[in-house]
Length: 151
Image (cartoon, rainbow, N blue to C red; front, side, top):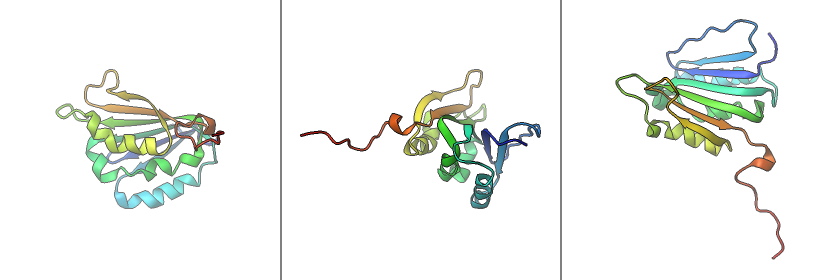
């Protein structure tokens, strides 16, 4: 398998099979206890600035029990400048995901220094929610250190 250029992290009772020749690092976390070991193991498979896309997929019922900001921040060194970070929250038809359900995830993305690009209900999905953010290059950062200016 070649170097992964895409990371797919699945939290909770989800399943994904990809072809062995795909450049995808697939990470499955089913319980909170698995988080430290699984993230540490996954990080060893990546080189700095080698990942173009990061996808996190979880059910809305898993946000409070499985989502931790380190699931995204653990891979920050592997993300290329301008890499895309997408979060897909799956919700049941009887209880669609609402914007407030994604608050903790959105906050984590912003605090990581990512620029939010899109958020809302995915086309053709009446119960899910998606967030898309992008890694900023140092000179693009929204929050810059105070520049020296003459007084």
